[in-house]
Image (cartoon, rainbow, N blue to C red; front, side, top):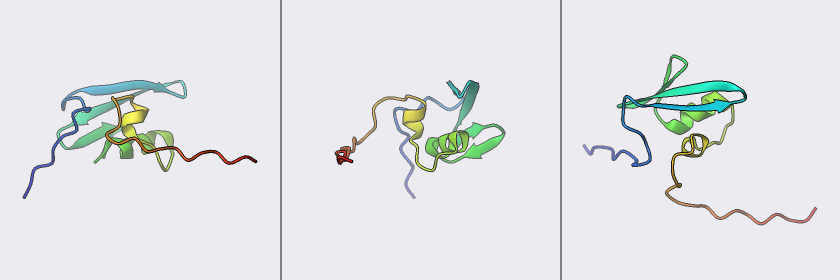
Length: 81
């Protein structure tokens, strides 16, 4: 069994991530094994951000502005309409 390596961009367990979203103050508690928001526990920060925003695809790191992503994906060029 291997231990999961914790991403260096994440604050330590016991910390709270806070930001405003659509006029509301959002606070997410960092746990040893996930994140807690609004009384619910999430395994990943992205799952938590999805619950907060209702978006299907969202990066928890980008939502909470936690450092640079590990891998930057090139954007597809826009095609003229």
